[in-house]
Image (cartoon, rainbow, N blue to C red):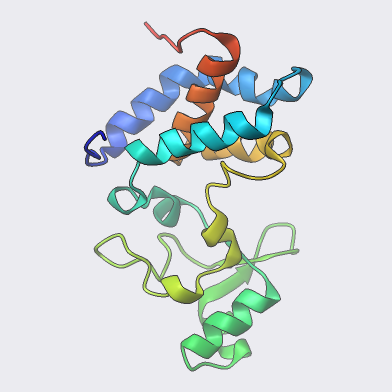
Length: 175
């Protein structure tokens, strides 16, 4: 097994910028391809990704993004923090720009520790539990999410890159 490497945000952004010209259009249009054994391919590729990536060395999602909080998430986290639902919302959350979903007021996430670990991990929002959603049961439906998340998440970028290579038979090369 490969040794997991420390995360370098500058190197990651440079890699993303080089690869997005190929991977962006690929993931955006992947639903147009006929892919045999997609579920098996997604599962195997996801397993390959997690052999190389350790989220706790990165935590870029917690630093740059915000999960959406369902009503169940709000109740669960507020209870864990010994707060009322309303006090939790007032202190930590705001509505997104569409006014439809509750999100963190600030970034990085207020629950991210200095060690890149979540201080509410046991009760974290459902959105966090599933992130980066690369092993989603309806993988093709997630392509818009992947297109966005590639910029922030090394696991998503690696997943899309490996899927590109396995589906097209080509390497993602850049000059």
